[in-house]
Length: 369
DNA sequence: AAGGCGTGGTC
DNA sequence: TGACCAAGCCT
Image (cartoon, rainbow, N blue to C red; front, side, top):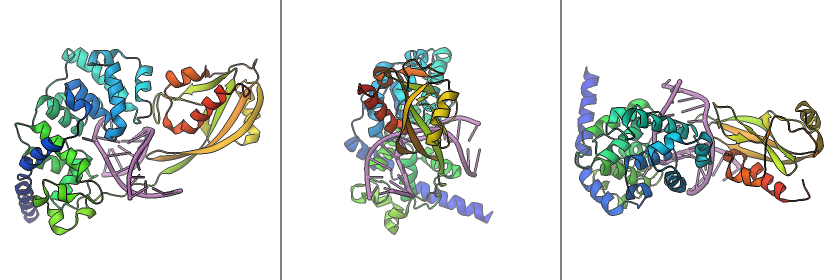
């Protein structure tokens, strides 16, 4: 009982502090907001696309993808009908590819269930595939003016500092607590601006590491600044070390084309294309054997420089092999593509970048193939 | 709750 | 070079 009372007192103190923030923060936002494509025309479709695209993705990385995406697929119905290959190509290089698959599913639901319009309702938005608490709050508040918080990484950092909270921001309960606090202070007349102001502050001023406190509209109310502990916050549990996977990637060449294969429909890089590759290190001497097992007739092979790619949870250490087939070799179970198709039609993950660049060079040098 | 799921910039 | 991190979601 005593503990609960203490909690309530803390909550009241936090609320008292946070109530001072919206006024100066929103004013600051209106004077300092960056000009961004989805802010020019914040239609529900564009806001939603931008929010999905910016999940765990920097604004600068997402911007060109956003412009291309909404030009090619300007509304829910065009997205709902888009080919999966088109979507993967539009998303190529952005990462977290399930986002765009979920977008198509969500667009289909919006067309079939809501007549082609995003519902102006937090719970309905939240129920869409690929939309979580943050994205639902962002879309509802920015596109429809619904007074719900949108707690992303920026907001977690800003609030941790204003409240001098040393709680681990990766814990669900911390996110929930911050959300509940914000629900009580979010301005009913401009929830979208308020949410974006918190994020914009986190992106431009209250940045990770050494914050630019002298520019901060909330500096007078910030407990971390008062205590001189801004740089120590937020607190975040350390990430688990990545596991290392050895792989072998084969640039298989035949008659001026390179072999591709489609990755499985689930798991890492699902549904994207790759060069023939397999787990483990294929010793050079076994290349001949490998080719025969695929029913291929090998003319020559050589080792390529190895390459490394770091994912969030895995490191690929890739051995590379160039293998040129005889012109009359069977094609095996691969998809053979020339340079134009490789560039324009098939979505390859960045993980293979070094090999993709090599493939272009090889396909464009006449004597190699 | 914790791990799967990408990529590129920064220090 | 390596570790951290970004407008998170799903299971």
